[in-house]
Length: 243
Image 1 (cartoon, rainbow, N blue to C red):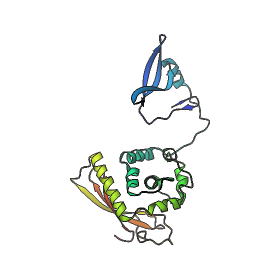
Image 2 (cartoon, rainbow, N blue to C red):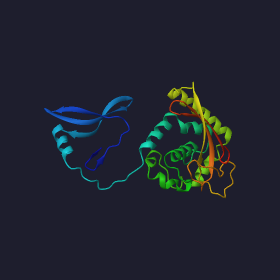
Image 3 (cartoon, helix red, strand yellow):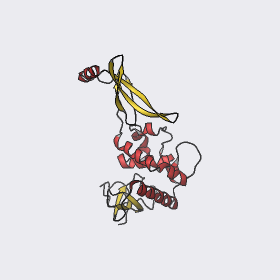
Image 4 (tube, rainbow, N blue to C red):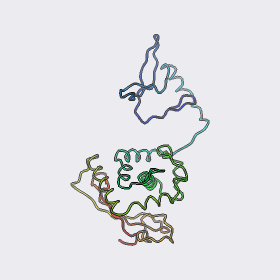
C-alpha cells in the first residue's frame, strides 16, 4: 500500500479499524504485534475519513517516480514452505561448517528455488537472483553467490548425508501435512543440467531429454510420491543415459 511516497510492507494480515476522535470517524490499517510479550495494536497507516478515502480512490492513479519489478509469488510460496519444514536448519544440522557467509542449507535452498522457478547455470545465478524477492528474503553479495561457492558447499553432501537429510525432511513433511501413505506412485523422469561438456561426471550424461534440450547433459530421477497432490517422499538419482 502506498501513501504519497511512503510504502508499507507486511507479511501479517492487517485489518481496517474505525477510530472516533472529537466526533469524527477515521479509519486506520492496524496490525497486531507482540510487544514485550503481549499483543498490541500497531497502526500501519492512517486512511482518514471515509469520504476522503473515497475521493482518493476515484482519482486517476499517479504513476510512480520509480518502479522495480521482482519475481515474487512462486518464490514467496516456496520460501514459506521451506521455513515451515525447516529445510535450511535440517541441512545445516547434518552439514556443520564454520560460521562465515551463507550456510550449506541456505545455498541448497537457493539452488532448489532456482531449479523450481527458472533454472539457470550457477554462473548466471546472481543475475536471476537480483531480479527476485530472494535478495530481500536472503540477502547475499555477488561474490557469495559465485558458482564456485555452490560447488564448495555441494561437496559437503555425500550420498549418506543426502539420504539422512531426505529421510528427516520426508518424515517432517508427512507429519506436518498429514500425507496419506495408503497409495504411493512411482515415476522416473530426467532433467537437464548446465554442467560443462568437458567436466567428468558419472551421473550427467547424454540421453533422451524430456525437456528436448539435446544440447545439455541430463540426470535421471526416480520419484516416489503420494497419490494426493504428488508430494515427493523418496528419490533416487541415476545416470541420464539409463532408462
